[in-house]
Image (cartoon, rainbow, N blue to C red):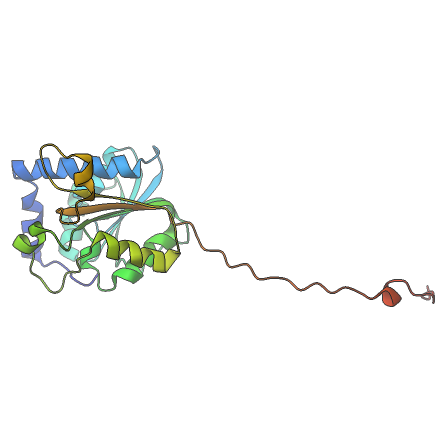
Length: 233
């Protein structure tokens, strides 16, 4: 990942979830993730950029077989202390996932794609190791929320259109579902398409593009197929 959190940033990030208002935000985000991901029990899932393990804990509670990867040693240590042996935790980068192709049923970017050094490579790696569905939760590039709270040039920000375009460039026209999250008490259907909403939630079915190579057939001439001269025994 491009932006690796320091010790103070890791502590501040983890403390954020302790506030009651932020707990409610997280509950909303978690419910949206599971509604869109719709995971099967006991299925395998990779939490990419798990941070201090909050999203990892939510996946464990959903009765999934969870693995998680995180580049920041400070984030990793906090997550490890919380989770213990309930999930496989690995210190590493989203752009170089140490797993075989189609290893997981699902993969999750829970507000982590923003911090990758090469987000297209991170997406490609997630699609490579995932066979069913990839979920992405990210801050909307055009939201007032982003303008008020985030002004860091080291962080990537995305629009729903731009992210969809990047995914199509990587995989082709695969199935994609997305909704915009506004954090309103009542969200109407049209608000789910609001281009200025705070967050983007997206699922991708990484159907692989298979390039078929035509095989040339050798057709023997009739003279070679039916020779009048018998072959010696």
